[in-house]
Length: 68
Image (cartoon, rainbow, N blue to C red; front, side):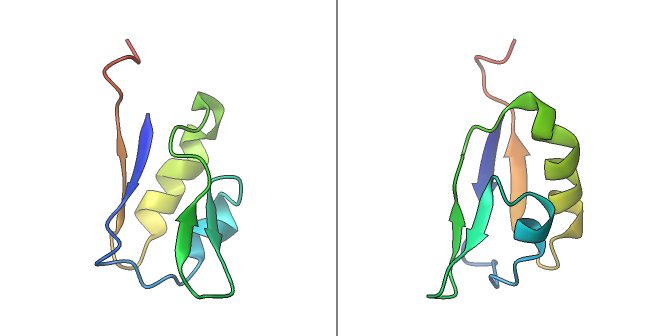
């Protein structure tokens, strides 16, 4: 799976970082960074929670074609 963020929608409010700090980070410049675009499968439940919790619906998970 791949994590995709629409940075035009993202407000860098750090809700996702609070849920999955291994993948998301809001730095001192107030921008969101994706630390791991292809996180391990065991993070999927928390990533799905981050997607659902994003106030701007800026995050989505895309299935890699290699993840058969």
